Image (tube, rainbow, N blue to C red; front, top):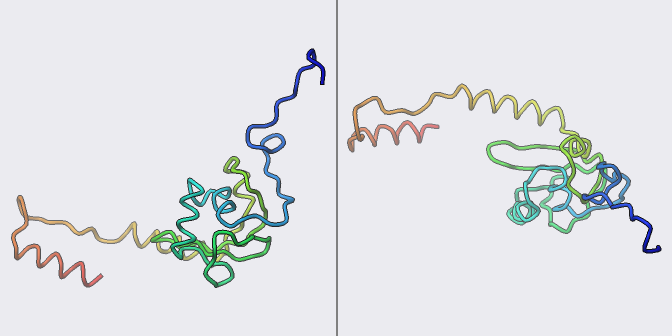
Amino acid sequence: MSAGEARTPAPANGTANGTANLSRTRVRLDKWLWAARFFKTRSAAAQAVDGGKIDINGERAKRAHLVQPGEIITVRRPPYEHHVVVRGLTDTRGPASVAAMLYEETAASRQARETLAFQLKNAPTLSFEGGGRPTKRDRRDIQRVRQKW
């Protein structure tokens, strides 16, 4: 390249035109979880894997596991649990529209999440009707109600 020629800058995220490279054969689990936008940072994804919050095909996963298309990944982020089938692979984080193409949530998982969200939304709130700070007796009553849940 001569001094007078201009270089074409590479895309910032390492992909052509901002689209993910979905043709890869294997990617580390922590990178895939981060790229699929289940976690905001890769270190948060790694902590979740190490903490036992991620299963692959029903077995506890390790962060260096190489994800392949077709695997079923269970992501537990309380109070919700996602069961997703891997559809694409990338190790770069792109836009949410590209991340949505990396996986497909199972119908049973989606239904369970919607049911739980409805229950949580319509659950009765625990509140204190008295004025000021609860008395010892009031606190015991509140504890009894909470333990029934």
